[in-house]
Amino acid sequence: MDDIDRAIIDHLRRDGRLTNVELADRVGLSPSPCLRRVRQLEAAGVITGYTAVVDPAAIGRSYEPLVWVTLSRVTRESMTEFEDAVQAIDEVVEAMRMMGQPDYLLRVATADANSFEALYMDHLARLPHVQTLTSQLAMKTVKR
Image (cartoon, rainbow, N blue to C red; front, side):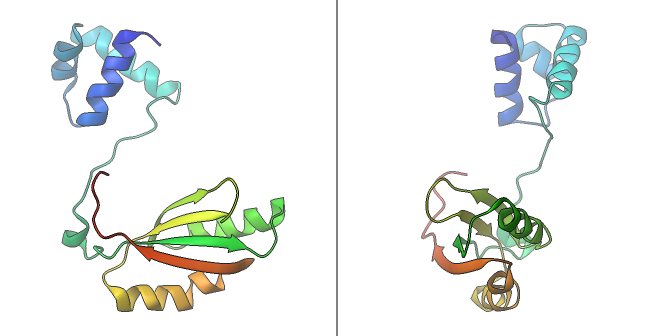
């Protein structure tokens, strides 16, 4: 990976909707070699996909608590079962396995406190191998 690849990545991270012509112009390449580099970065798994950043309030998911999860036992099997179960919960928009305690951090997106409580009671508290759930609510998102 060279400076041009890094520039391509930087521009696409800022605006994934750039046309190839615009991107090529910004990184100082002609369109054909620029597209070839983007395709190589995709094939190598450096660029893993493209997404839209959506206003959570516009889609009824502006209540975004963080949930710390401690498992009752930490084994390959318990982690796999927990992680597989988390995949099935649409409101869990991000799940990270942590080093040390707690074992996981979940970012949840629901409409409001009532819908989060229902999710918490009906799904999160029933996840396999969960010992403790601790929820926190951010006061303000400063940077996403």
